Length: 78
Image (tube, rainbow, N blue to C red; front, top):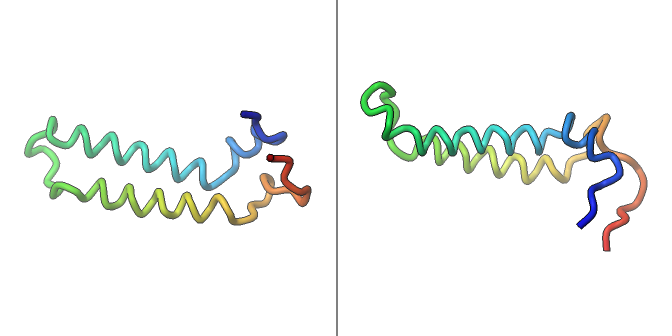
């Protein structure tokens, strides 16, 4: 496995990375929700549902050209 040439820019600016981080946070909140008890009046599954939506958005964002991240060079994978 090799990193892309501009991995620092991808890590810093790509919306897919940001959305994946948000999805991870939401998943963590879903796990922590039972520990909070009645402090957070959120129905079970809400964080999981929102996490699914954010993960789907990250999947789409991965294929969208993003200024500062995308380049016009062909892929060197394979």
